[in-house]
Image 1 (spheres, rainbow, N blue to C red):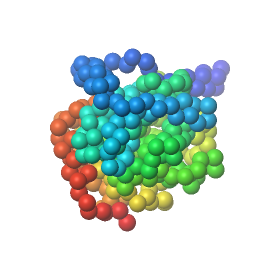
Image 2 (image 1 turned 90 degrees about the vertical axis):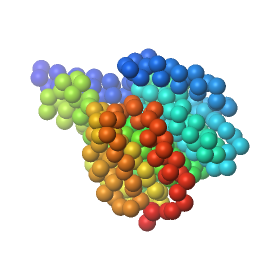
Image 3 (image 1 turned 135 degrees about the horizontal axis):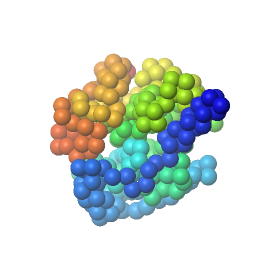
Length: 288
C-alpha cells in the first residue's frame, strides 16, 4: 500500500508540473499583466501556427521590417503577452521579433507541457522563423533556451541546436532541479516520493537528471553565445544561485544581480531594460 501511495503522489506531482494552471493570478502584478495583454494585442503584426509532433503552438510576429531577428520565450504558467515590455524593447532596438506560446500556454493548443516538447518547440521555431541573432527568455523559458543549445547531442530524435549570438536569461531555471524542488514542496512529497517524481521526469525526457542542466550542457558542449543573466536577489521562485553557478562558465556570461527584485518584477523594472539595452548595443564578443 505504501508503494502505491508513493507512486500515485509522484505521478500526480509530475502531471501538476506539466499542466499549467489556467487564468493564474499574479497578485500585485495582475493589473500590469492585464495591461500587457492589451499592449501586446496592439503591436502584434501577425500570428503563425507552428506544428510539430502533433503539437500546435502559436508564434507571434512583430516589426517585420527589423534588420535582425529575435525570439522571446515566456515562463511556466505565463504567455508571450506577459513579455510585451521586452518585445517592445527589442522592436525599439530594430529587431524583427518573434514570441512563442509554448504548448498548453497562452493561445497554443494542448493540456500538457513536457520538457522535451518545450525544447522541440524552440528548435522548430528556429527552423521556421530563424536564424535568431538574439534570444530572450524568462524563468522556464530561459532554461529551455539554454537546454536547446546543446541537447541534440544527447537525444537521437532531436536534430540541430538552437543558436543565438546573444542570449538574455531573466530569473531563469537553468537546471531541472529547480522544478523538482518547487513541486515537491508544493505537493509535500517525502524523500522517497520526491525520488520517484524525479525518476518520472528523467524517464519522460529520456535523459539522466544531471544532463538536464544548462551549466552541464554548456560545459560539455559550449555554444558560440554571449549570455546576460539578470536575477533578483529576492527571487523566491528560482534561487539566484542558479544564475551564480552558470556565471562561473567564463567571460561569455555576465550576471547582473538586482536587490529588491522578485521573480515577476524582472518583467517590468527599468533597471532590467537598461541592462538589456547595454548588452544588445555592445559589439564586443566574449564567447570562446
